Image 1: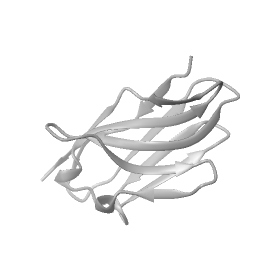
Image 2 (image 1 turned 30 degrees about the horizontal axis):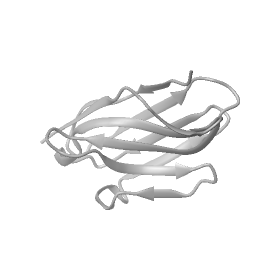
Image 3 (image 1 turned 135 degrees about the vertical axis):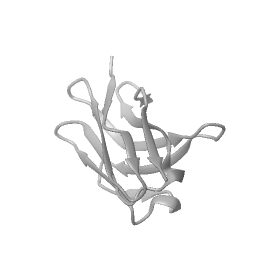
Image 4 (image 1 turned 90 degrees about the vertical axis):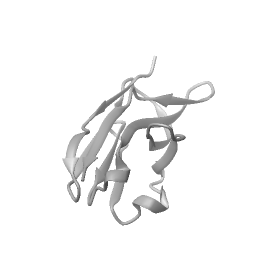
Length: 118
């Protein structure tokens, strides 16, 4: 059973930085895509950033130039470096990995709270 374990998050002032990390348990995984989503109270879950196994990245327009996603294929980990944080970045951030075993399945982390104070 694959599990995603997140770390990082917390409270930071406007303009500050945080780093989120997520590791998948298990060996021999074929991870097609890794990504981070976020969900703020009363809002829909949205994609923040994603990275494919080949290293292709895409970002939400609202975080371009401020956030950087990276992955370590050997360790099955994905990280999100968040700089120049704004109050509107406040949300629960969820790690997502699309993994192929017998079929392609989306796995989710438990979520970590990021709060940016003004």
